[in-house]
Amino acid sequence: MTKAQLKKVDARITKAYTSSCNGVEIPMMKIPEIFKVGRAAVAEGADDEALKAKIVAFVATIRAN
Image 1: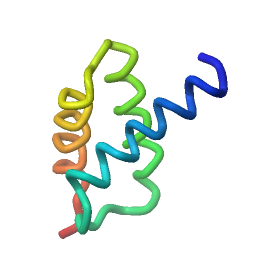
Image 2: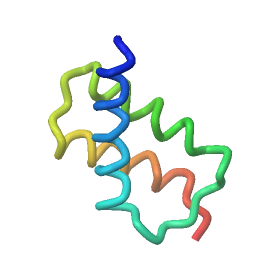
Image 3: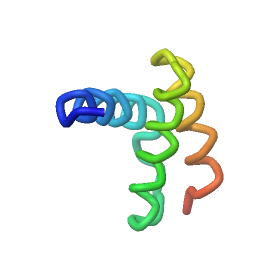
């Protein structure tokens, strides 16, 4: 994946996270894992809704509040 493609994927992950998990406390050290889950979902061909669902499911397992 090129740098430009990675940047677009990361933007999709950020958008999915902020639109669905805003205000959820998570351990700071787990942020890279959110991107790892998101990148794997995109690599599997997930659209924006599927990406959001994967991120929400993962965040539910690591949330602090």
